[in-house]
Length: 387
Image 1 (spheres, rainbow, N blue to C red):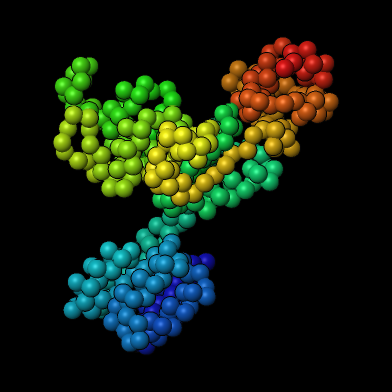
Image 2: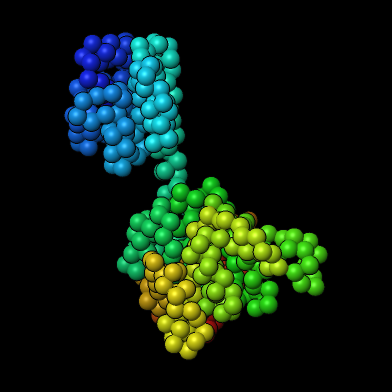
């Protein structure tokens, strides 16, 4: 059943619209409001699949209703009804987020077609949001421990904003998984996530890698080249191991964050970019700041939201789930049936000191699958997983 609200101050038009919709489809349930204030109150207290709203009304006009409704129920589509003199206003409501507008008196076929399209579009929007909540298997955060659940909850709260996020934690804990979850659940998910490993790029090349260069900027610059910030436009850039970035590059990143502008190496023309920045590091940036290796102003720009990923030793209850996940994944990669682990084997692995964190656990699971028996036993762990 599709719930449709008609907000219209002329009772005769309300009745006509209600009758048309009821006769068109017995799955339409129609509600009415006589003015903008009543309509907005109904929207606040109920969930409608569609709102048909007049523009010129007493108390609150259609523009005001649309503007306020989009703040509280952004997914609800609006069809605006406009008199001949309201067409300019009707076009403006499209900019405010209305699905469409119909002139008075409404043409029957146009009205019904627009209603059907608006309801279909609502279903697509809802399905798209549902799919955004799903993250591809490759980047699932496995675990049900309190620390991991807190991170998942934080990601759900932060993902749809453009807030910058700084992810901290030891090597091998899965900081990149958090970054991918943030991007895939964000409103930028249809645009690229560009990853930059700041530790893997020589300091003399990092600026060119991030911001691009023009031909002749340096010896090997044989042609113009766009950088990672340009490649990430409208999407997300993930600056991994940002604690290893040179101070010179840090200054340029700071400018990019402050002004949403970058300049290619060797150029004098600014390029506007719309990029969400997620950064990660295994270093204590506060200590790096004290020792003059990291800019404090950049830290405060990056650390709008802080997410700390725990070491595996701090979430041992997740080890059985991680073993099950890696066992299944390795079996799929090798085209073989997944092996099983005995309870004693899992309990022994839970007791290990995982200095290499999840990355080390994954390697140990793969080694045991290759070298162990059909069911990985405690003795297999003692023999092949010795630290």
